[in-house]
Image 1 (tube, rainbow, N blue to C red):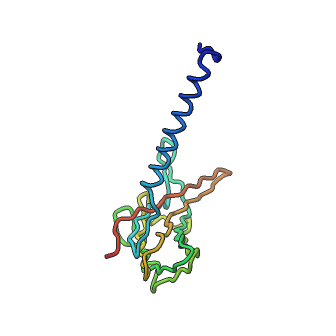
Image 2: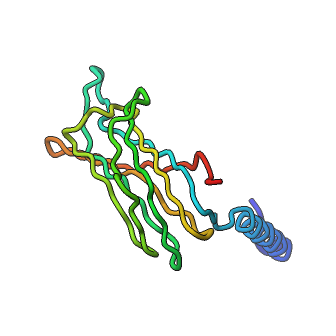
Image 3: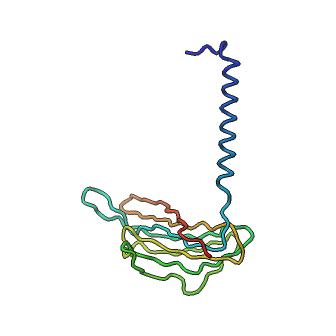
Amino acid sequence: MLNPIRTGRRGLAVGALLMGILWIWGAAAALADPVTRSSGQTVYVPAYSHIFFGDRRAAFNLATTLSIRNADPEHSLSVTSADYYDHNGRLLKKHIDRPVMLKPLASFEIFVPESDTTGGFGASFLVRWKSEKPMVAPIVECLMIGARSGQGISFVSPGRVVQEAP
């Protein structure tokens, strides 16, 4: 066991050194992760129309909400497509007929009801958006929620950029 009287100055020096290292590490992390700016992207978003539970692989159906949030406080964006695919990669539905304009900080959602299990366990959305100027990229994610017999489950699946617009 360390004697706090003997290690006082050395302990302070070690503590200050550790604080300095943590500060530099934090500053480096902040510099390594700048705000992403883009003028358009294609975003892949995992979705689940159901999940399996128990030893018998019973299905637990889920309602799915695709959320597209314009995170830029100054620029608008246009959502040009939001296509829903099943677990085999087959297009099930094109949810947008014409571009949807999202003003700064606005959001748009697409709802797939709990009763629609056509997507399967590996369903997904492919979302395309564009803007006139480079802007803060939107937040694109799916919220899944289900309840049965007093039991509920909910979770969020974040989107992943798979292509930048040319």
